[in-house]
Length: 319
Image (tube, rainbow, N blue to C red; front, side):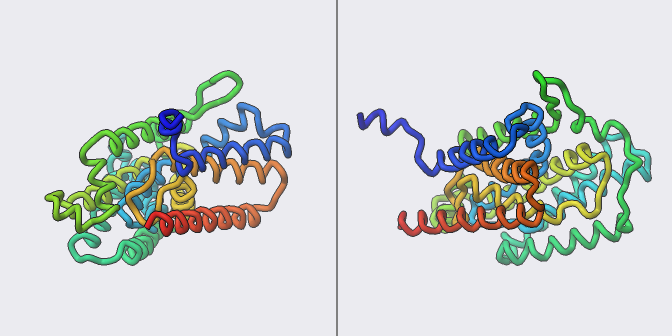
């Protein structure tokens, strides 16, 4: 009996998945359209941008940090790749690479300020959030970029899966989660990320280069923000300078709802996917019920407070 119990996943891992199932069951009783395959494919398409941002955010939170700039850095990457393609006529792959390079540089900047100057991640990323927002507005002239090549919107295209039209970008998001899960769970670098989040000083004393680990995490997070920018452009068919203004909080909400501890060192990246789906399910279900978007934001706020409170009590109980 004890052996059987030991094989069960911990409740903290199952909790987000159970919450997702409960939310789906509730909204299924409120709308006949909710359980349709078309609606589920729509939810996947709606969460793919935030879902990819949440991968980078998860890695940073696992190190006991936080990144408030992720949404605006993503928006800047989208504007850069869109304008490079529209204004300079660059091929889609080259323009996309330029956009990802910009988001990666912001990740490097965040990482250097945190590791070299020892500034708190909250303050650093609050500053770079404003910097990214200002550059985005100035470079775009606060205008949406629409004249972009078809190659940049390919991931927004769909394929038939039964009755559903599934976006290729949603498949990319799922593949990235599997890759991130494997990297964090099965590689030495991934285990170092958890170790830094648990106790950075003790990890440093064991010979692990904690500053290099932290810098690598912020840089890699910047890469994920760039990929999210590609998905955002592909989904909307345009570079929007006003994008990213809520994605930072949505990504943090997804990570916390997914069971990753804000104190660092605890969490599973696949939980962030479940967290993103929870947010997507609530917004989709409330929309089908005819609930105002203001109340949708209210519900999201309540969810993240409950998740953080649970994490706080769990952390105190573990001490």
